[in-house]
Image 1 (cartoon, one colour):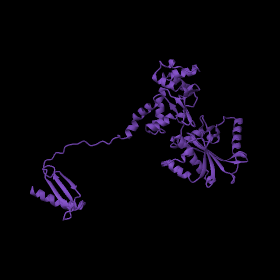
Image 2 (image 1 turned 90 degrees about the vertical axis):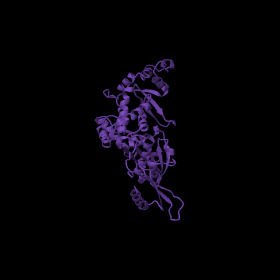
Image 3 (image 1 turned 30 degrees about the vertical axis):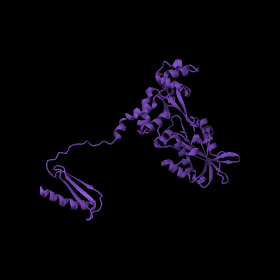
Image 4 (image 1 turned 120 degrees about the horizontal axis):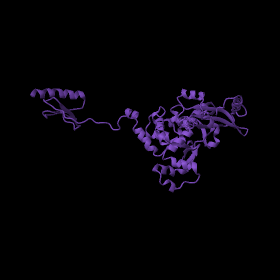
Length: 402
């Protein structure tokens, strides 16, 4: 929900809107003879849910629920965030939903088959075990029709707001670099004007951006052929490249077409700053290549992205100082010089052999490293007491002969 600007009229409108959302006829009491409908949604900032019922051929709201995500939860993948929204929402409305069949609606199509996932492990297994206590049916709903829960999962203010900032600081959720990209202050290095300027200064992005800005016609290969290999690779993605406020973005969509995101075409000058944020910062966590790559691809795209991420993680001083070598080192072989008999002796046990008439089935072998004198002593077992009883008298006898 957007915060209104200051002013008596705006404040009055805002209060009227809040009053309408929390009073009849939008908000009503639950009916025991009607089935519940639970709409859930998750985002990078929080999760939201709306509990409702069909009363009088109209869908009426019973209750609202929203929750900000913590540091660890913000690092979850999209599917895990959506599943977290379901788990937390059902827990919150437990007193309404337990023991009753209800309809669960989500805009994330993958969750339709997730509950039938075979051999789940870890956190997913614990969540699914918790959900098995409830009787519900999952239904996918397009994002355009899922605005009731979607608005509850968003950050309340897109602009600077002391209330939201204080709340995020309390839970360790300061605005990250993805929010900075959306700001429009000219002094901000991540404003649209500054990003466009940086893209125009990048020799690999400049030809693509200029042709997007100056002409609506499709760029031919003859115009791109003299450019650098990186520019040609950007040109190969021309169908997914779009301009938003003069800034070049790449539109990524999943294979099933149910989810997508806008990736900023990042200029070369901004790459170190982004990698520091996604890998070196407190929210980055110094994760390995795949996690850092996944976090970076959620918001940005540039040529040779994977190679740059791998190089950055490999050359990270903090990672190198904390993580040991991949292979365990072995001690070097060395000589052991001897100068007298019985200074160093070797001992081993052979067997088991067939039992002798005296009940022995093992052989205690003893050899002096200096003289190479061998001794073989039959013993009935490998117990330490047995070895000591046979070994000590034999050593005394041999040393007496010398």
